[in-house]
Amino acid sequence: MNARELMQAVAEDRDELLGNFCAMLRISAVGPENGGEGESERAKFLTKLARDLGFKSVDVLESADPRVPSGKRPNIIIKLRGSSDKNLWVVTHMDTVPVGDLSAWKSPPFEPRVEDGKIFARGSEDNGQELIASLYGLKALARNGMTPECNIGLVFVADEEMGNAHGIDFLLQKNIFRKEDLAVVPDHGEKDGSGIVVVEKGIAWIEVEVVGVQTHASTPEKGVNAFEAAARFMLLALERLRKRFIVCDPLFDPPCSTFAPTRCEANGPNINTVPGRQRFAFDFRVLPEYSLDDVMYEVRAAADDIEKSTGARINLKLDQRADAAPRTEANAEIVRRLSAAIQVVRGLKARPRGMGGGTCAAPFRRLGIQAAVWSTSSQTAHDANEYCKLEDVIADAQVYALLFAGKNLDSN
Ligand SMILES: [Zn+2]
Image 1 (cartoon, rainbow, N blue to C red):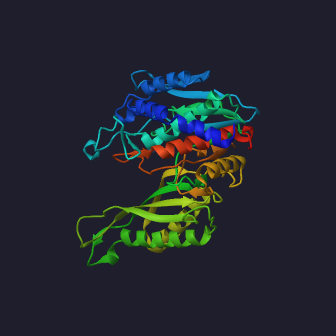
Image 2 (image 1 turned 180 degrees about the vertical axis):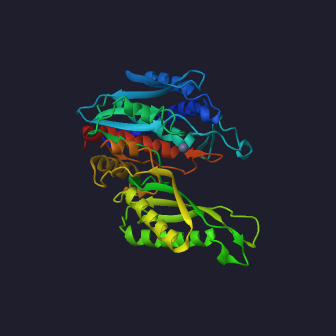
Image 3 (image 1 turned 45 degrees about the vertical axis):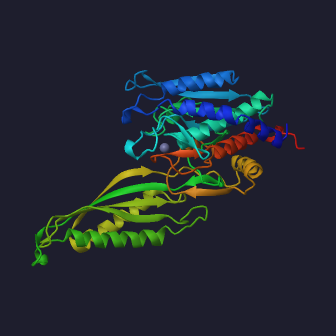
């Protein structure tokens, strides 16, 4: 088969894919933290579907979770042998966020509505679209007796929306993945399907508490103004951080590390009191070149200086810390192969890029695996009236099919 024939094979499955996609979306897969029963029912449907589609190697790995009626959070792995020893994984998730405000939905979120080529349902885009696309991309090879270039593993995980403990982290502990492997984690995407995320910034959220001495506002010299000390500290810290951590990387938008003061809490109800306590927060997004320890050190040093000059005490608390995972190089094998498939299907040049927040590719990158975050996304994840476009599902399935087939495609 050549690329055109394989893409045609995917396109011919359009109606069948849509039918099974909608059947899957009808089965709720909300986690117990959000009042759901987990992914068991949806996993049963998908396991049967994979077997009905002819896949012989369909395994379910279950993580025990007493919070759901089945007591288990299932993870499905569908494998198809390739002509080389290399493994290529596509990791998507079965679970969804809850519906949110039901009155904002134009149709019931678990009764998929197809209108103007769009499929409206909770979980249609996040992450059902890529799950079903990867499945039908692989099916097109299997049905036509075509061997993938690498061993392909489709992984449908549980528990992505609420922390990954029963999904990706559970599987990582099972040592299924090897550092020589390649992975696509369609955790994010752009509308035209051109962006491939290969690197993320590290994240630090810092809560700041400045303690001074409260007094009457007509005699401020009798107290220590916590608000003023907080303002001085904020500006000094930002000035030093922005001077020291200056490396920019054009893969990111914005290209540099960002240091933003964010939440500021009320310090008292009235105007005529000098506040004795001021709380605010910082949100830092830091390029992977830098250690968050060094960032924290700089912030503490600024706090020490302001403590000396004002007499206030400054307490810093790290509310959240996520060190950046090592980057996947922009010309890594997985990026090159995915870009080539996107070029054929979409006729556009894929663009490696960085992201300011974490993605589910990070744990794979920490293992040393080349991981690309890619999909074509309507960017309605978690919204009311979430949707995906059927055209995007088919095109992404074609991209997966070409990516899987790789060198085994006929060149004519
Ligand atoms: Zn999500």
